[in-house]
Image (cartoon, rainbow, N blue to C red; front, side, top):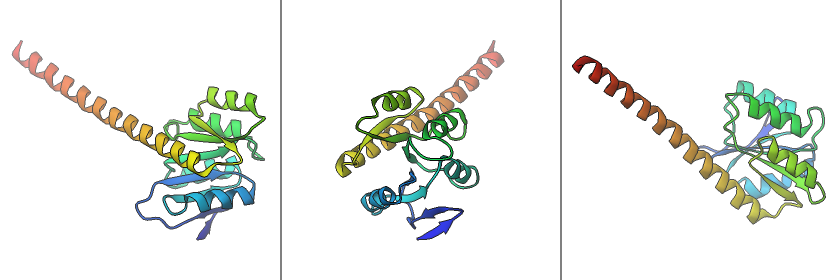
Length: 164
């Protein structure tokens, strides 16, 4: 494992990248241990760190975001992610305590894709991650097909313009 500008990375060739944004070192370690074999795991302690990393590096395939992180509140980081064209497609699963119902509703209302209740249940988290990654893959395939369809429409229009 190596440190990069306050972020730690695991080495994972060909693995999907999951970024954990959480200031609690114990929770970081727990989640990394749960996901480390299956995913390349990046860790940021603050929303600013995470956003800064994504400006210069490859973006993660999914973000696990604690909504109660310091500096940039998790909700502010979520809003920034979802309002940035390059980052808005990243699925965000936010982490919330059991008694944070208003925070969960606000998170989903601001573009969060799902939430995981703390303490984290490993199998449920893995299922939610796989589901969000699958949805993101389908959305990417849909965007590609839409571009191909538009290209075909343009070609058909050109043919009709030449014929008529």
